[in-house]
Every structure is written in C-alpha cells, then in structure tokens.
Length: 155
Image (cartoon, rainbow, N blue to C red; front, top):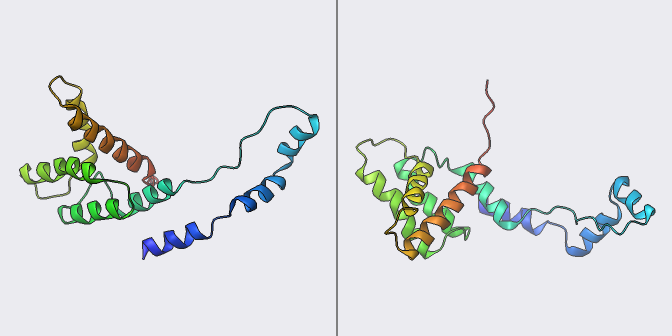
C-alpha cells in the first residue's frame, strides 16, 4: 500500500517543462533579480529526490532505534524493495542480525547503535577494505534514515 502511494506521488510530479513554467511564475524576489540585470543565476526550484522519498517512507515505517526482532526481516526486505541496499549491504546488515542473536535481551534492537559501533571499529587497524566499505555504506544509510525519522514533539 505504501509503495503504491509513493509510485502515485512520483508519477504526479511535474515534468521538466512544468518546472520551467513554475520557475517563470516564481515569487517576486526572483523576478526582481532578473529586472536588476545581475548575472547571478538563481538555483532551480528544489525537487525532492526519489531516494529521499524512499528514505522517508522507510523511516516512517520502521524505527531504527527500536526494531523489534520480528521486524528485521521486513526492514531488510523494504530496503531491498526500494533499492536502498544492495547485496553487499545485506551482508553488512548481518551485523544487526548477529548482534540480536548474541544479545540476551529479546526486546527491541537499536540497529543504529550497532552500526555506529561497527563503524567505529572499522577505524581501527586490521579491517579489510571490503568490510570497511560495507560498513561505511550501511552507516551512511542508517544516518540518512535517522535524519529522515519524524521528530516526536515533547509533551
């Protein structure tokens, strides 16, 4: 259901010709620059990337700071489905599965903390290049997911 909503959203995004017409109808601040004759070219209107939309969708569905053990498989499948992780990333994601199995607590897993710890360990000598690359990619992914997580308002 979420994938259908995202697909519908992406299909209804304006085409490049629509963006040009929107730029022509930009707020008066932009048109004032054009009237002054300055050579400063203003940046195009901000468009959200497909990856950012997918990150937001995953972040809203899963809390990487409190993943239930039964959600790990669903989380991995969603990352694959949205193209946010490849086979090497899946291999690196096994760190989270292994940490969950080695933990004596059957509660939620803080996957972000596990990846952060693994990232710090890759800074030590003795880590192979491929391991370092996998962990760095996973660390970037989890940092992006963490920043895309909606913030809870303090009550």
